[in-house]
Length: 330
Image (cartoon, rainbow, N blue to C red; front, side, top):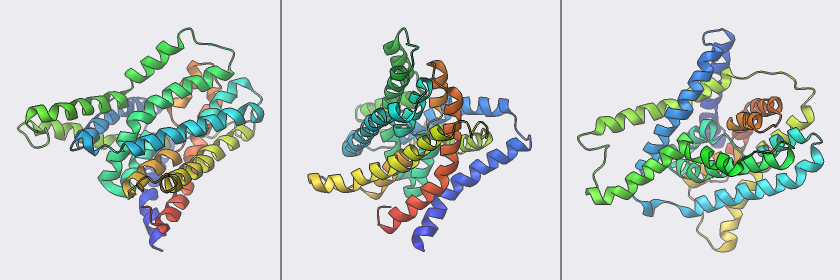
């Protein structure tokens, strides 16, 4: 019973906020323009501020848990390889192969993963998740370009330049990088912090903007739900949903639970389990749609994968959370 109540309190806030977005859009309380511009605001400013604050709140670089980062990167790469082996045989259309392949390893960590980590383990879970995102986001960008360029006939003129630009201009990466710069400078500034000094209003403003981002982005995600072309794309959608919501979380959590003990490494803490679970179990990344459109992939399929993985992720995450809570991970 405790596990079910815990799961309810962790997952249903995400579901209800997304449902609110779906409702207000259908009632024309907000427009598509609002959703588009709000999404741009969250991505460019809200999440950048949130990432900066979460990294800035770390006491020192010595507190960074590199084992968590290593496992996150390793699981993403394993899922990438599995998808690369399966997709050519399961998806006949070259324009759809890269889209489905991304579902194996690429999650919507900003919109769903970060608030889920917070709901599971509070601010500690969010800090670990922010650290993981500093490495997962650039890796997603690199692998996403590989996925889409490996299967479609259209080739990018300057793929390396595109990847570098995607990474260095990504607001999440900018926020994390700024946070790390402040961490490096803190010992040379006598340990002074924005959050307690004379200029703490700057910290409060950044924290307030960052606090808006995950919840506003969930409202926007719900408002963007559009159900169309499902029957024609059902096999590809089904494979994408299964790989994103079954294969990734099951394989990922099995690795982080059993591999450390097999290798004699320290077990993960509850906050670390929460951050990694959120990484593996979150639905398809929003950026996969625009990337598919830019690189000659099937953007319609990418949009449908985004919608259906987001829809089915809520009951899936609820069930996983109950199981892992019963097992004592969270």
